[in-house]
Image (cartoon, rainbow, N blue to C red):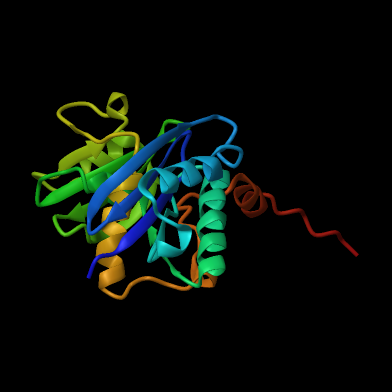
Length: 220
């Protein structure tokens, strides 16, 4: 079965879009903006589709990087694929950015990392089949590396944050997301648009403030 996927990654300032057909990356376009991608993304998608003679209705499923990353960027990507899926009656496949980073590794154990700012990283360990071992987390780089299993391959686009040997992943992850999403789609793991939710990993500042701020009870 030949499957067409439109993949969107808007989770960092280095966003990307991709068209994938039959597990092959047909086209991949990068986006870079500190102000979000809403003002450019849909025009770029339209241009990509026109270049290859695809219509939006010819897409079998819409793939999205659903985090971790920028809270706003995650929401923008999810909103876009939900809109496309609802308009065309198609499904959504949500793919973790960390899983997409691990796709570029070659070892049996792949320790994927993304810069989370605040001197922290988003991190997760995957096997060669890109199945998550344990859980994804936000942590300090040194502590995470020290706890890794022996032989785990470090994979990241943010090599400057990690000491030692590392497999460098590209900034553009949409192509990898589309290929991974194809496998998930064929395995019956696609979902309806309404069921697609963010994978933030880190709590938002508002949530952390609410948890830490507990006003004293007023005496009566």
